[in-house]
Structures are given as structure tokens and as C-alpha cells.
Length: 192
Image (tube, rainbow, N blue to C red; front, side):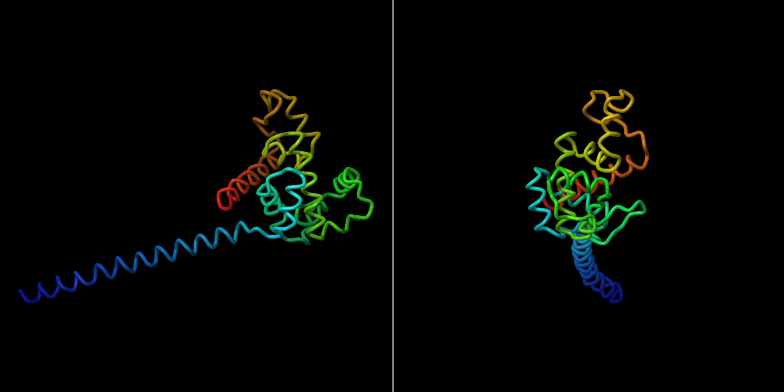
């Protein structure tokens, strides 16, 4: 009988200790998870992103989503087709934006400079967003080009209303758009 009482007494002590330990581990795990999420979706180059997204009337979280997707925040990134910097600007796109900005002093090598790359990338995003009016279509145009997206929008197989893309016919652009939209939504959820 004394043995059963002693066993019950240990159980009464042991159960709260386990519950407290589980609670502490749960809280620790939650904060570790939160820290990891914020590290995975950083707000690097904040002053440039804030300035140039505002100057071009685009959501700064879209800019962060593009930088995250394009380069993982590596200013020295070069794609397999030669796109450069944080927002992966191609040389012909650089030349077009340079003309639009009437910028005589910037050279393509400046796309490795975060400030210039974000300035040019935001200018491009602003132009595309003004033309297409949605994050998905803007992302598609950023990836595949304005001409392609206009072609898809005029084809009823891909756009019922000529304004929204209902389907993206190339898998790499569709995948890219999914990544941008997902990152954009996560940035909004975390920081907005």
C-alpha cells in the first residue's frame, strides 16, 4: 500500500514537470521557427527598396519577393544567361531601362551595385505593373518579357478577359510566377 502511495506521489510531481518542459520546449520551438522564417524572408537593402519602390509606385514587398527569388539577396549573382545582380537585370533590359530613365552615367557593370540594381529593377517593375496591373502578370512579364505576356493576354486559351492570365503556357514562367506570388504573400504576411 505504501508503495502505491509513493508511486502516485511521484506521478503527481512528474506529470507537471513534463507539462512544464513540453510548454518550455514548445515556446522555444515557436520562437526558433519564427526567427528562421524571418531570416528566410529578410528585409535587406531596406533604404534602397523603400526609396525606389516608392518612386515607382510599387509595393516594396513585391521588390523583396523579386530579389529573394532572383538572387537570394546576392548582389554578385549572375544567371546562366548573364543576368546580373540582386534583381537579375539582363543587358538588353538594362539598355531599355537606361533609355527610359535617361541615365547616361550608368554602365551595365553597375548592376552589381545594390543601389543601381534596385533602382533599375524597381523602374522595370513599375513600368510592368503600370502596364499589366497585377502581381502575377507583372512577374510573368519580368520573367518572359512584355511581348510574351501581351501575346498570352490576347489569346483566349490563356486569358479569358484579356487582362488577367488564367494560364501561363510555359512551365518555367509559371513556376517563376508561383514563386514570386508565394514570396510576395509571405512578405506581406510577415511584415505588412
